[in-house]
Structure formats: structure tokens, C-alpha cells
Amino acid sequence: MKEGKLIVFSAPSGSGKTTIVRHLLSKPELNLAFSVSATSRPRRPREKNGEHYYFMTISQFKQHIRNGDFLEWEEVYRDNFYGTLKSEVERLWGEGKNVIFDIDVAGGLRIKKKYPKQTLAVFVKPPSVDELKIRLKKRSTESEDKINMRIAKASVELATAPQFDRIIKNYDLDTALEEAYQLVAKYVGAPNPDKDTAS
Ligand code: 5GP
Image 1 (cartoon, rainbow, N blue to C red):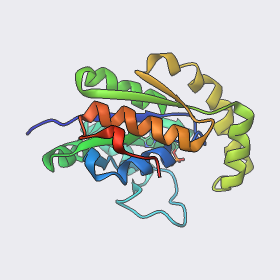
Image 2: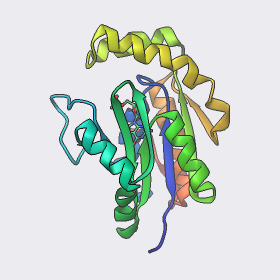
Image 3: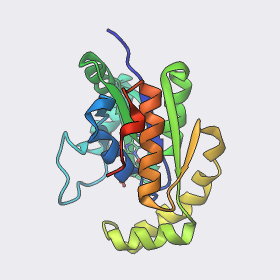
């Protein structure tokens, strides 16, 4: 199988990486496909199994760990396991796609380590930890407790930024989208990336 390129977007929760990844996926010339992760966290109301995540129980997740099915996995928050299935990346490579990941910093760095030559690892930096808190509250997908857990983790995650290939500051969304587009277009060798606009 021809192995494509891997593009990892990592950041603390609430930094806007999911918005950036969605924007990039809407650009056909980048030939990207989203790596759907497995997770043991509960499904949110608008999420679909197989599209946003492969939702599973903790014991199913642990069985996959024992079977060696993961390229990487992390217990990102207590009892909330997340991981990239090898079969997912192979499936997308089989379709001739470049694979894009929206995963936590530890997982992102692990993929970079496994595939150093074909991975672009991008860290999305929020303006500040306070701003993260505001964004997470606005999103209101998590309880106060869980928001605090995510904020506590953010400072540790921010310290890993220098280990990534590139850092995109998400202070202004349009600027971050355009910067991400140019970066990825160049990396995958998309035709005429300069002609794109971020809209
Ligand atoms: P959420 O619960 O908000 O969907 O995701 C929580 C965190 O887990 C986010 O930082 C997300 O990027 C990360 N995540 C999602 N999938 C994976 C994965 O497969 N592996 C790792 N290591 N982290 C993931």
C-alpha cells in the first residue's frame, strides 16, 4: 500500500483546532481524509458513531490495546481513552488520501515519532489559558468539573509546543485558517495554494 502523508493538529481543548481541521477538510485539492479516533468518552448529542469517533466502552477500548490495534492511544482525561486505530490510517491510505488528525499533544508527538518523514505536526496555540476557559464555557459541551480538568491540563500541553514542526497562533480565526491552509497545501504539494482564500 502506498503510504500518504500524515498531518497532525494538536492543541489544548478549546484552542480551535477542530475548526481548523474542518476548514482544511473542505478543500478538495488538499486530498485529506479525517482519521476517526476510537474513544471511551460518552457520545455528545450531535455526534455520530463512525463519523466523529468510534464510540466504545472502556473494556472494548482496553481489548483493542491488548490486541495491539492502536497506532497510539492516551487516557486523555480520567477514564476517557482516545486512540488512533492502525486500521483507520491503513483504510485512508488505501483510498490514496493524506490523513489529518485532531488529537491531543502526546498522541500527536507519538505519531510524529513513528512516522518522522511523512508527518507534519502542527500545534495550535490559544491566546491564553483564560481565553480557553471562556471558549470552553461558551461551547458548553462539558460540565464545570470537566472544563476545569481540561484547563488544568492546558498549561502542561502548552509547554510541549516547541516539539512540534510548526505553531499556529489562533488569536484571530481567519488568519489561523489561512495560515493552516498555506502550510498544509505546501506540505501535500497541492496545486496553486497561493490562489486560495480562507473563506
Ligand atoms: P474531545 O473529548 O473534546 O472530543 O477530545 C478531547 C481531546 O482528545 C482532544 O484534545 C482531542 O484532540 C483528543 N483526541 C481525540 N482523538 C484522539 C486520539 O485518537 N488520540 C489522542 N491521543 N487524542 C485524541
